[in-house]
Length: 223
Ligand code: ZN
Image 1 (cartoon, rainbow, N blue to C red):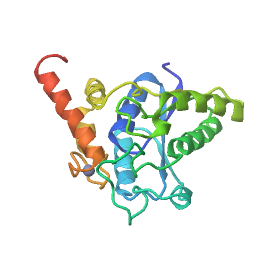
Image 2: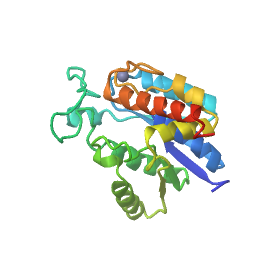
Image 3: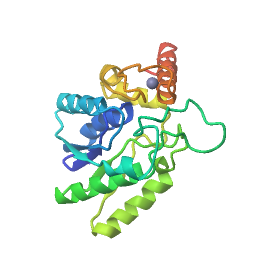
Image 4: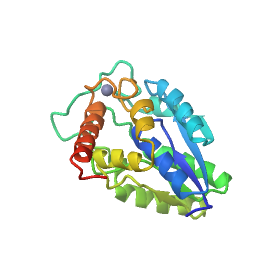
């Protein structure tokens, strides 16, 4: 894959930052794309800019305000509280319907305009938290649709698809960016960087994975 180009769908969070450095390892030329879609914390985009700069990767940020207008969710709606858990089987209220499809579709359009065939996204279904557009079936289906819709040979890479959070920490460590991911990324639903608020579902997932990873490393199971 070396010497080819890739476009990373980037948000400044743990997963997409790990993917950014994964892409740097596997592709000769890496570009990142991020969106301002009315998410609560524009501070995420500030983190994204800083991380991209550190990585030496050009970052293009596009407005996608429409996403917060057409439906309601706790990530874009200031009046809605982030639920800590769901009483039934419905997805969490932080789900932004259609987000990954739109992100990848706009990324694909941008990629084609720049002659880039490889798209990289940090979605995964191991820690599946009820987001249907994080699933592998969806990615395979969209890949085919994008190829057909633009008559262009895309390859969507999902290096985190089958990894749990602990394994994603391990990947960051192996890529030599453990501290950067730990300190500079924002995953918290309240927009607090690093360890975050510690209480929202995203922080709980991230911090549990980190704890497990550090424990297994200490026990010598992971070198
Ligand atoms: Zn949090």
